[in-house]
Image (cartoon, rainbow over all chains, first blue to last red; front, side, top):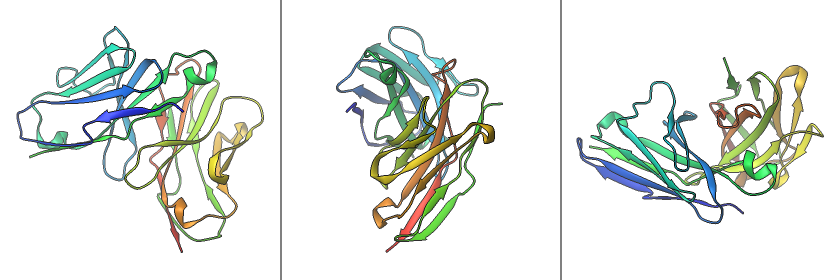
Length: 120
Length: 114
C-alpha cells in the first residue's frame, strides 16, 4: 500500500528558532501534498496544499511566512516553522495524494504518522 | 459553508456491543466520503471510502458505512466491537470539484471495555 513517512516524529525547540519537518511518499509519486495541524482532542485542520514544483496554497488564517512549505519533488515536501513560539506547539501531519493511473489513487489521501512539535 | 459533523465526542462500549458513529456533512455537489481511524500513537488509516455505486460500503476490520444522500449522512457501523477497536474515528468529505479540500469531522473517541 501507499506509505507516507515523516521526520522527525518528535522535536523540541526553543522559542525563536526554526524547525523543519520532512514528509516523504515512499512508494508512490505524490502530485499533491497536504499539511495539517491537529490540536489535542480536536480534528485535523488543513494548513496548506502544495503541488510539486509550484507554490503552496495556504488556508485562510495560516501565515505563509511563518509556515514555509516546499514541495521540491514528487516524493518530498517540507514544512519549516520559522521563529517558532510556544503557541506553535502542536501535532503536524502531512498527507499525500498520488499520481498513479486510476481515479482511486488520485482521490485518496495517505497520511504520515505526524510530528509532535514542542516549543519551549 | 462546507462542514462535517460527528455527533458523538466520546463513546464507551463493552466488547461485543454494536457500534454506530454518526457523520453528517454539509457540502455542495458530488461528494466522496471517508472514515479514518487513528489508533493510540499511530497515524491515520483509511477504514473505508465511498466514491460512487452501492451506498453500503464495507471496509477493513469488519466496519461498514452507509451513504444516505437524502440525509447527508455517512454513518459508521460495526456489529460487534473488540477491545482493539479503541481509537479515534474521523469522518472526512471532499468533492470531485474540490478534491484538495478534504474536511474532517471533530472525531469520535471510542473506548471499548474488555
